[in-house]
Length: 429
Image 1: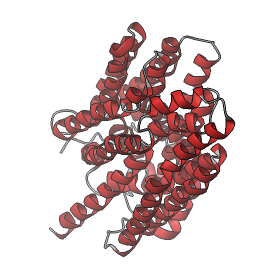
Image 2: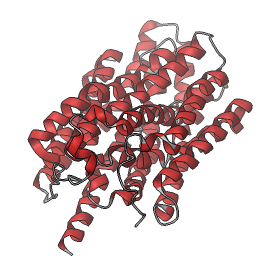
Image 3: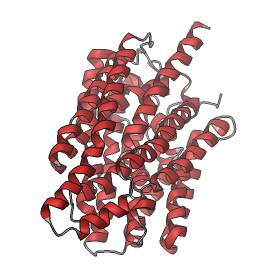
Image 4: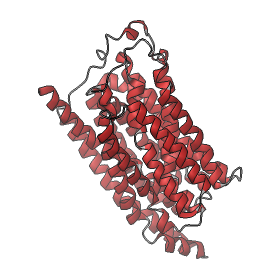
């Protein structure tokens, strides 16, 4: 009974953290058009360095995060991650005052550093705090916290920093006097100062809360120590299902960010006004939220997490083709529906990839977190292809999404079992 209560308490605490992840992460969809206008960027390739700076932090900081967690443990590592995120948030203040795109990117990278530490700790924690077969269900609950925050963040930030955005854009473009133009842009840039100061305070308060909480520590060195494969495995690189899972997560995060953050740029390319496109990210997240609810209902009672992953990948292939084959608001609708296909991917990929790692769990988690760099590279590839005229807007999107979903389908059908042939198949609980 005590263990069950501890698990429930842990799920509530991690749920709060996932809400924070979602709120900060999905601000990028609003920041892309905001910084493009406020910093007078020339094209979408430059603007998508917002996602590049944010998500590349995961690649560089995931393994150091694993080393930090080995010294601090899960709880203290999570608190430290929140403090680092707060430092990244406060950097937005001088960035806004100087209207410096480089400083904004620095703040985003530092935020990503903090999130890398938080994600490296919280994802394996929620996966192994209960039965591995129902991990996708628990992560789906975390996903609801994450995407609820993600739905709110672009609405809140968009209302604050992109209010009357189309009118401001028109005034800036029409201004012939440099002084007038700078005043307009400075006023626009200053709008982010108050929200990010508030965010800094909240993150620091959460860090104190986590530090003082009675969040139970999990000894992953004992986890699955009786599995036959752990007797002979001496390196994390010997787990084929993990290595294939890292690539799977890389591609998944890439298409998730495309569906969530690039949907506005896609709409702008179709000639839709900024006052409309600033809300498109929320549509994708609503779709993802519906997917998480389905995950909670059906996994693992009616469908295994690997079968849910396969079905999601098939949906992704279908919706990608539909985006390519349509235009206007119909295409935008199908991009938003990609959120439905993406929802159960992280909840399924992560536990499938770390299953049976035992003492390698923290390092394996760090490798998976490195895969989040897909959110940095695939959107940048999409914007480069269309901006350089290499492919049309529609084809550029398809090139980035279709192969990704096909690989995810492979992992769901076969890849997750690679190297695990000696492990008895566990039954759903």
